Image (cartoon, rainbow, N blue to C red; front, side, top):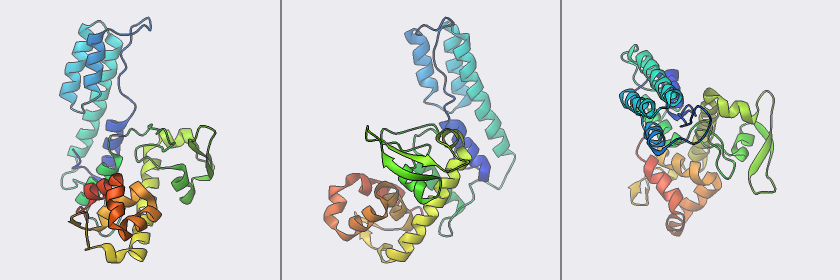
Length: 251
């Protein structure tokens, strides 16, 4: 699925991760029955247009033409992107944004970092979008100022014009731009401070730059330094170790 080209690859990411998922509803607004709800749930778990057509037929058969139409619209969007990608033979990956990664490796890395998020996803901590950028990181990159926790312990900040929370969550290209900036900054810091870690055996694997970038995405640069310094931390913080292992070896 990720053998795609440049900006078109990002478009495919956004189509698959977008909030354009169908919601079962009656024409009068009351809850849908289990059969329509099940069709929607299955539709939201696939990006195969043929499967989506099947789920649309199920919803329509249950008496929910609007839900069926929403599912079919999602299938059409995916087909349109796939058609665009197929028209660019020989350009099968996103363009790498760092010199160590091939286009194919960068594409896999972006897919891993996006995970199962939508570009409208907001975590309980206040992390935003497809790449779950924290307000503190967005402040480092110049998108917001004054990052802080609100009364409920959720991170918030003031947006720098012309940006806003709403525009950020609705603009996949902007989210990708911020992700690239963050990754480049992390790369520079890792090479400046921890280049000697590349090639060491950490958590049972020979460390590569992509693995250290994965750990940094999870723990931040300060957390990475502690994780590198102490073997006990690599046991104590399994999420950071898991992020490292999943990304390691890509480049």
